[in-house]
Image 1 (tube, helix red, strand yellow):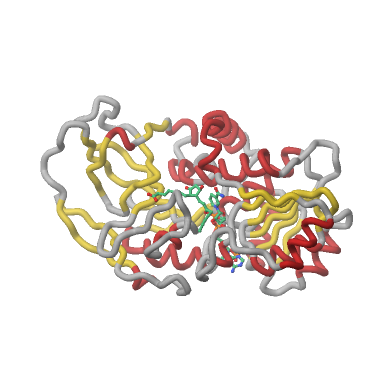
Image 2 (cartoon, rainbow, N blue to C red; image 1 turned 90 degrees about the vertical axis):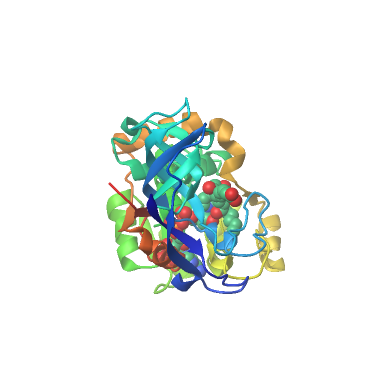
Amino acid sequence: MPVQRVVLNSRPGNNGVPVPAHFRLEETTLAPDLEDGEVLVRTLCLSVDPYMRCRMNEDTGVGYVTPWQLSECVDGGGVGVVESSRCSACSEGDVVTSFNWPWQTKAVMKGSALQKVDPQVVDGHLSYFLGAVGITGLTALLGVREKGNVTKGANQTMVVSGAAGACGSVAGQIGRLDGCVRAVGICGSEEKCRALVDDCGFSAAINYRKEDIPAKLQELCPDGIDVYFDNVGGGISDTVIAQMNNNSHVILCGQISQYNKDVPYPPPLSEEIQETLRRNNITRERFTVLNYMNKADAALCELSQLVKSGHINVLETVVEGIEKMGDAFCSMMKGGNIGKQIIKISE
Ligand SMILES: NC(=O)C1=CN([C@@H]2O[C@H](COP(=O)(O)OP(=O)(O)OC[C@H]3O[C@@H](n4cnc5c(N)ncnc54)[C@H](OP(=O)(O)O)[C@@H]3O)[C@@H](O)[C@H]2O)C=CC1
Ligand SMILES: CCCCCC(=O)/C=C/[C@H]1[C@H](O)CC(=O)[C@@H]1CCCCCCC(=O)O
């Protein structure tokens, strides 16, 4: 059976900006018969994520992430439907997901590597399994709960960087639902600022490309900053940390502004920022969602209810066609997405 797939064509290097030519679309053929335990799946949607930038390097620098190999099919989060099965756990028509879904229109996968999911959990909106009711929603919810110290009635202000992205847009909404009196987003365009305020209930948003971040933070956070959900690192985060209250909390979720640089994860802070953290007793703990998977089932159930009831509004940027994978990844790394970047492969 002929299928299309995306392979890694070349590496950007530890200091390079990824471009679509680092990926290549190929035709390949699937074996006609399944072996015992195997499942033929048709890909519905694929997830595009920042951590994939380190999979483009020979050495990812992050223990739990493996490098993609040159000329081999790349993989990541995916959702699809079972077309035929020789695995007792999967039947034709089942909707399944995996963290290691090949960027391929159809694939033969081990049934044991797939998780069966119920489309009702997302009211049939299957791409949500890769976003708000999947790993990015979990990252937002568990990141806030595990590291944010949000307390109802405590008059707290939350700031979120990368706020109009998949994790950020949900994190600010969770912050509000959990009791923050203000959620202020920092993001890279006017359109994103509008989406945060009009669609996601953020109190205000700052366009870091156009506005003076320190002045806007002072204006929009009159009682200082108590919780900072950090998706980007670098200069934006240094600016936020400089305005944080005593005994406040940074949720170190990601540092995307540094991913095209040859620095370890998490990138080291300047001596000045470290001193600010110490002086003001600000916690800054690294958060990795994969370390909290024992809480995933309950959290996914909560996220499903919050999305279905309209308490969380989901933002997505959906691009169609496997041939757009490279473009979509490179675009997301430069801010081309609002909400979760998804590639739709088939109906
Ligand atoms: N700790 C964990 O377990 C997890 C961490 N993460 C991390 O969370 C963060 C967000 O991921 P995700 O929600 O999937 O991605 P997003 O949907 O937020 O997409 C990435 C966004 O990052 C912003 N960005 C890119 N470069 C810069 C820059 N130099 N400075 C500021 N902003 C930049 C862009 O938005 P803009 O237009 O605003 O610039 C872009 O849209 C990432 O750092 C990721 O690594 C993700 C999942 C799990
Ligand atoms: C560049 C370092 C990024 C660190 C932050 C980040 O984005 C982490 C993301 C992971 C998160 O914990 C959940 C995920 O899905 C992301 C990693 C997934 C790992 C799968 C690796 C698959 C493989 O290597 O085979």
